[in-house]
Image 1: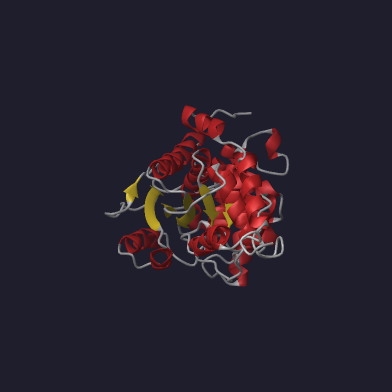
Image 2 (image 1 turned 90 degrees about the vertical axis):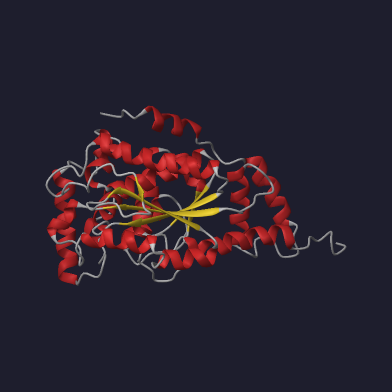
Length: 355
């Protein structure tokens, strides 16, 4: 079984630590002594406590936050799995630079900086987009491997380097966003393989397919898994990076790298919908220690998303019937994370009121 990784990836995995239990214990003691019944603020309490564990301090902060939108194209669109042509990926990258997309609008409101990265589009990288292109789109995974193992690792490294750069600039959290026509297809394939779910069960409508085309998409995913020798026993023959190479996407690999790099640097990772969920799941498969660094923002309408979150034991906070991607749901969690910290620092304790 080929489990070779690059030195960069190996060093990153070595740096990913479990959350700081001492910091979390101290934060929990503070939260439990606030003027409220213990646990009565639910997930908000757990958010503050986990931020303490991630930042390895009983007094975590959230001053600088970002969202990275990784972009890539997919050869499997040749099979008719999307209602839109792959050219839209390039058009949307331009839209991001003009700050006209949903992620730009929401991020402005949330005070998050948007970093758009072309890790694998089939078009010319627009001005204003970070050009980290590994390959001009993946190959058609329904006919063979989407990319080589070396290409998948190169895309992972793009994400790791970006996370390291953000950490060096003082960012404390990064939301995972994506853009790539056809990318719900590799995402569903990855979730089916890793979470052990039936393809028909977790294949969604993506960009708006009708039921007949959704079923045809499921057939393409089944064929892709079969051609790439990925079945229930794949762990006996290959590792998660190999699965990612065979039926994944360059932007998915890039986001997996962001997840690994952010965890190694002590940054929180906010997971968006099905594509970001699949990427985080692959990072989790590569290194289970990333789990504590992950916050599930919302539950996508794409059925593979819930399966990916369940595989990582993550509970989504928001239920907004969203399925856009771009990180649009992930950045909506930022105000709640900030509220959790305000709760911890600004609420009175029982001792403050004389109890």
